[in-house]
Length: 242
Ligand code: NAD
Image 1 (cartoon, rainbow, N blue to C red):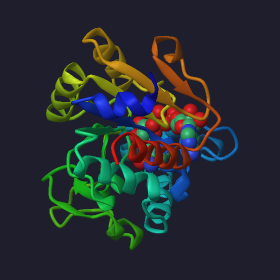
Image 2 (spheres, rainbow, N blue to C red):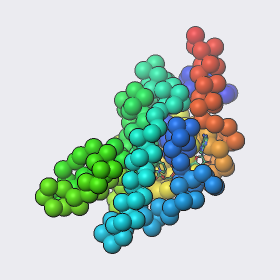
Image 3 (cartoon, protein in one colour):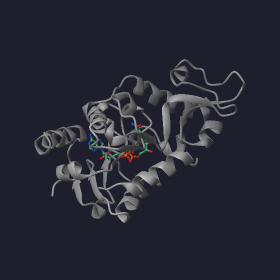
């Protein structure tokens, strides 16, 4: 059996995406050597509540950089293919660790965002949300006087409960679980492949580098770009089910 035939046969395919899904759009991931954000910033120090309150200048610089980069990028063919697969009933749910909103922009509708979104900032005090570009114009406080912060989950903050519950349910019900572009080092997202496997799903990991969960997978693809792999799978799907 091949990944294509699993995709064609699966009734509930869940895709877990990580930052590697968006590097082909020009957005750096966290951990890739040289090109990852970690090469320039230390997200584990900057993407924190502590930095928001006590190292505000560095916090704002880090997020202004990320929001500006996001504005310069757009979804690539891989994002669009996943949206097309949803329309064709090949994919049911995308669970993403990404905060770029590219899946929705490409047309995916069932997207569970585990780590929030960089598309908005909101007030830490009153909760009011604004488009994140205001951050680039130096709007860093709300009318109420509260601190504006990106609507992403910072290190040390709990994940949105609804998203976690929905992601767990999706993983439990999956019969094919596809990981795209994640080092699977961030918890609890990296528990989802275990949940899916325990409930009988096939697990496929497509990631440039090996991950710690490769031994658990039924198929792994390394050293290849996601966009190209998805394009090839799509061509093969057309042959299986024209
Ligand atoms: P990660 O940086 O830890 O891992 C990304 C993985 O993707 C790497 O192992 C890398 O080898 C692989 N990769 C990169 N480009 C690839 C490509 N074109 N094809 C195939 N594989 C490729 O990312 P993670 O596991 O998602 O965890 C990091 C955290 O970073 C998440 O919490 C996420 O919220 C945050 N983040 C998000 C974005 C975004 O929204 N685009 C960007 C940077 C970081």
